[in-house]
Length: 115
Image (cartoon, rainbow, N blue to C red; front, side, top):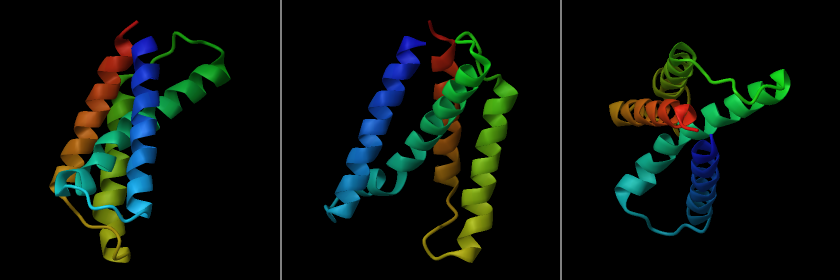
């Protein structure tokens, strides 16, 4: 679990740095500009979910099962890649985003299993 907390902290710092660079309008390589936040999304969101459930249940041994992790992945993929793009110019449907959500979800799932 210590490794998940470390990755969570590092991913949050990386996300804040990325948002700061966006705010300062600094040029970034396209891959980082378009895809890094999508990769970071699921480990951050799922970690917050796990830490919240552990806090509420007062049980640090709880883990999110694969079904729960995949359910959150599907919800995010549908919402951000299917529902929002036709409704707002800011969002675009992109299969690479979906793949990065999936990779991030499995990374979280594996990390939460570690001690």
